[in-house]
Length: 95
Image (cartoon, rainbow, N blue to C red):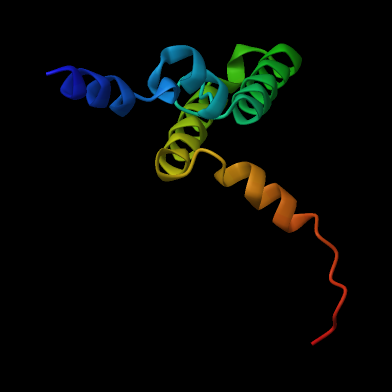
């Protein structure tokens, strides 16, 4: 009986606690990474404050971009970080 209790207590991992999960999992805001959300919202606010509400269709485009970002980040939350690092890599070999 005592052996069963010690085996059960050893089976529980500390990494499943919410505190440790928050340190290891990638944080998404509204389903997208923070830098994508800031870029999208910043672009929308800039266009609307610069040109006014006559360009309301920019909001529709930003909503479409947001859901596109969300679609790509569902499978891999670090997709955009990897993509941006890949695009800024220099080609060292010309093969």
